[in-house]
Length: 368
Ligand SMILES: Cc1ncc(COP(=O)(O)O)c(C=O)c1O
Image 1 (tube, protein in one colour):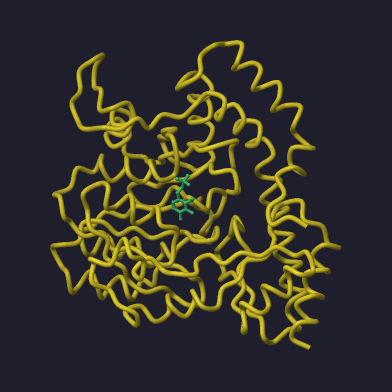
Image 2 (image 1 turned 45 degrees about the vertical axis):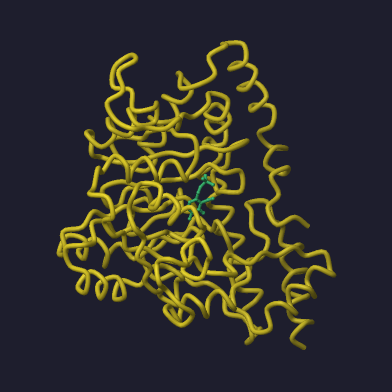
């Protein structure tokens, strides 16, 4: 059993991908061309925003949004520490300062009340509120949108794990001023390498991101801003266009897999499965449990050929690279507790019921 089985997807659309890749190779146009433009148009429509800008990775999508906002250096960005390192890394590289607040233990996402407390306490110093829609579940935008308005801060979504997710019919990527997603191969819409996209309905912001993505070049060989090489390749875009045709169906298959896990694991009291509040649709990038005796369970499953993963064993506020921010053990109790208890199970659209029964039976056996 694999944690994420990309090969099973390839069995379905491998031939189409081969044709698409050969088409690009023959075209000899390899960076930022018609494939990228078509993917941008299709994904902007999918997400429900006016503009999409294809970039080199999810990390660069975040960096480019934050650079394009052109905020005073050192401005604070309220965000979560229970995320992949790239969220806070991009904030730093944009010359801003992450300010970590705690999570909601039910969803693993940024707690709106913790965010509000920080916005109140640091009023005037915070310029951006940057929630992450973790494991595919949209952050609580019903609370975060009015909060951002009330405190006059810019809302940016890290949607690197949540493309395809929804909250009350609105798609992840469409909340706030802008959003970043990732096409890292393990993501719900994964490419054959690195890639990412910026979503926004702010055309001026999109224009600036496009300039910054090619070294800040505003006209041929005129550099208006300090940019980066943040371009997306044509082969990636062509690959992703094929996968996009199957994406709605794959999202439904992921939902089916999640429902089966919920049913199979419900009788095990030592395991807490993720649940969805009304109005939420997850893209199920991960199926993440809270469990007792995690390390022992993980080893037990590994011996039975069941791969699992811990996202994330050490929250960002306790990482050496962010030590200077002054957070300590105990600063974010819910985040730290989650880091001790989470365990992600194999999750992909083509996981079979037999495989899921095998996972559930092994977990039952462990606790018996
Ligand atoms: C929450 C989050 N933010 C940012 C990133 C960065 O994306 P990428 O790996 O495409 O740079 C990822 C994925 O790796 C992620 O999961």
